[in-house]
Amino acid sequence: MTRFSRREALFGAALLAAGGFVAPASAYTSSWPAKPAVPTDLNAEELFCELEKNGRGVTLKGPEDADDLIVVRMVFDTQCPWCLWQMNQYAPFRDRVRFVWHPVAVLSRWSAPQGAAILSAKDPEATLVEHETHFRDADFRGLDVRKMQLPDDAIDAVWTNSKIYRRAGGRDVPFGVARMPDGRYVPLPEEKTQDFAEALGLKL
Image 1 (cartoon, rainbow, N blue to C red):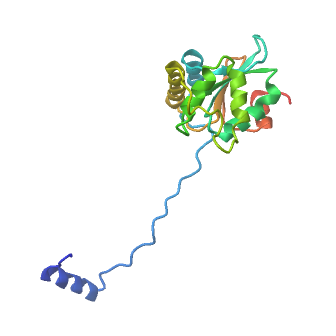
Image 2 (cartoon, rainbow, N blue to C red; image 1 turned 120 degrees about the horizontal axis):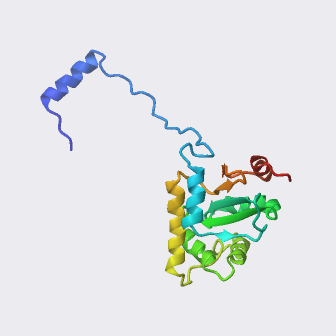
Image 3 (cartoon, rainbow, N blue to C red; image 1 turned 180 degrees about the vertical axis):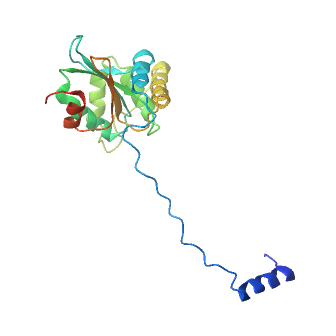
């Protein structure tokens, strides 16, 4: 039990008599402004080049090499529903743009093993499609990796992708960078089909 000295009691009484107690201010309400879709410190060229050099991803079947080829490198988390939505938004451009999807681990304990399962599969693209097919399963979201023995190098690759993304200033998934034929690097936050077409100068 807290005990007050006679001096403390007299001091409190004096303050009260003098009107010294001030009513407490209204409770502080914390708020944060909306973050920009493209982080202000993101280095798009760094992200693309590091993923190209040191990252590991799933290259979707698409156009052959050409001088005017647009290459898009995307980071995604296997537990992210918006990442799968983004893949579908990009589907109309699969015959004109090369897409490489790099799994990262930012959302769940299952992100790294599922990403590793996709990267280490004999057919990574087919396995990515299988993951999408099972994404809304009631028992387990996406590929069931709970009993899989996955190679360490594939798990390490997912974490390497994640570190590359963070070092370049990345924050949210899905996110990517397009390398344009003229050498420009265009950041690609989550966006609809029409927005993607306009950003890269493509026709629907």
